[in-house]
Amino acid sequence: MSGGSDRLGSPDRFGYEWNEYSELRPEYEEQFRRWTVVIPEADWKGKRFLDVGCGMGRNSHWPMTYGAAGGASIDVDDRSLASARRTLAAWPAVEVQKMSAYEIGFEDAFDIAFSIGVIHHLAEPARALAQMVKAAKPGGRVMIWVYGYENNEWIVRWFDPLRKLLFARLPVGVTHFLSTVLTAILWLLLRLGLNRLEYFRLIRGFTFRHLRSIVFDQMLPRIANYWRRDEVEALMKQAGLTEIRVEPVNNMSWSAVGVRPIS
Image 1: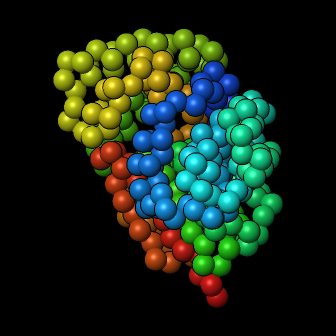
Image 2: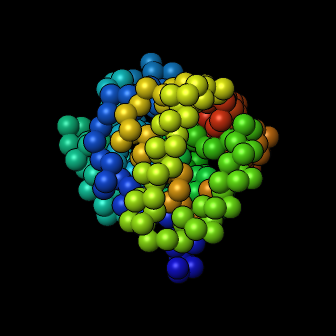
């Protein structure tokens, strides 16, 4: 593994995922609404957005259905970008570009700059967030969705060490194969009544393939940070954002938004 790969996180491994799971499912909209709870649907209308770490492009699709004016979706893996271009083919106002979160080539350009499920996988999250702030217009909003530590203590204590020692080191195809076993266990537990958290109640209705994509997504990254609420707020403040709002999502993660000061 090169130092560059360490710094970037796991774009090659996520590229495998988004090449394998590139279909646009209707239930993805409910997930998007929850991840972006700090930005109501009506607030996307007429806005230009930047989607940082767009993956297969699904999180750029929904703002366009809400009336967004267009924007840019960026990623660094060619397979992710190919999937995003297919997903967003109906939206020519969204430009899909190969671009790193650390070197965003826009400045003062977007009403909303957002990143869903990416910042917590980077070695330098503050640097990426600073680039998002630069890309937003003065007075524009910057939004991230990240893993929470609260209610994920069991993942941090038991699953995360296994991910670091085994799953993140295995060839990605092997990790994908093994995800079937863990998905089968989760599928069974959900049907036996695992519903303590809102997240489990949400995913209980997902197909086995959709569940597998979620389990695989948890297994494959080289870096995964689980942050407490105050840590997320501090990250946003460090980036120079104001009017910061941090909301819980599914009792297991955080949606955070802030405003880039006008002066």
